[in-house]
Amino acid sequence: MKPHDLLLKRPAIDVAVALAGDDLNRWVKARKRLKEQDPDGVHDFRVALRRLRSTLRAFRPELKAAVPRRTLRRLRRLARAAGTSRNLQVGREWLISQLETLSPSEQTGAQWLVARVAAREQDAEKMLARRITKDFPRLKRKLRGAFHHEWPSPDRSGPSKSASVVFRDTLRQWTRELEGRLRAIRTVADWDDAHAARIGIKRIRNLLKPFKNEIANAAVALEQLSALQDVLGSLQDARVLAGELRSALAESAAEVAQRACDELLPWSSPDDSIPEPAPPADQAGLIALARRIGADYETTFMRLRREWLEERAAVLLFLLHELGHGRKSRPRHARRAVRPRLALHRSAPEALRQVRRRPVPKGATRPAK
Image (cartoon, rainbow, N blue to C red; front, side, top):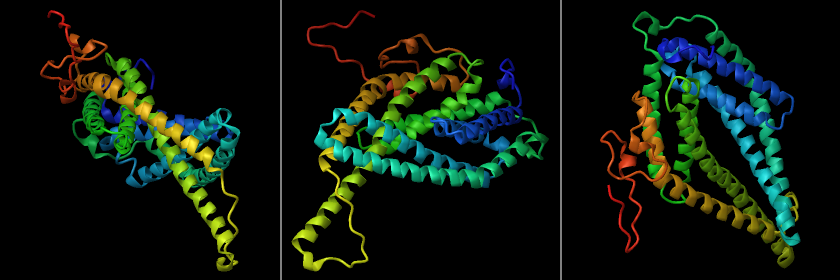
């Protein structure tokens, strides 16, 4: 669809088919780059697939006749396989970047962990390749057939919704879900809610992008959503790598315990059919990496809480609520870049009204209103 077309004024079903068709073409191109062993191939493949799934989710009532649940399940399986491979790739690259800053005694364990993560990454890539070989050709064929041809749809028999109605209904719903997730993030242990909030942000971004030239302040919202997604993404990367470190430390400890048993109780050696354990990794390197990841996670969480949960997230949510209700611009008080005031317009969302004022130091006076 051409950029100058007014998407929001067109029937929702026509816009849904056009956007999903564009997303499918983008996904097919990403698949070709993946075949060419592009270093960013998995990332591009994953992003294109996520965008396609977001469109199918946003326009589900309009596209359910063309895209059955079985197709959605296959897309979800592919997305999970691509996500596992990409997460391990990011973790391996972070570990490699830390090697030079470790002491010689710590590098032994760190290099062992790099090799371990690299092996798991290769397994994940093989799993992804098998899943793509099995599902991608079928999905491409079915989706292209659906998006490039007419299909019987009960929606066409009655009045057709405009794309504007579907867009704003979906944006309001997803904004409420995001608000709930962000409100649930209170401590560093609430990473499930942080991860769910990140997924919600990606969906909202994908929903806004096709309409950003037709909606005032959409570009501002996209910029803010991207910044918040980056912070939440850093938490997710640290969480995934922390899981790898937990498993590595447990495996290393088991190897050390096995060798101690073999030395102290040689007469009680296990059955010969059990393979000899691998040389134990130096735990000093693993512990050093675990401390760094823990420190990075806590620092990032403090940034999330102070910069976003206590300030910018409320303004962002208010802006999204405004866009969802079709308002062209925010009220003057919501355009202030820093901490919003407690008393706001009645239409402001609950999260914005609950933001606390900055405390005034002793001896200081508040500026006159």
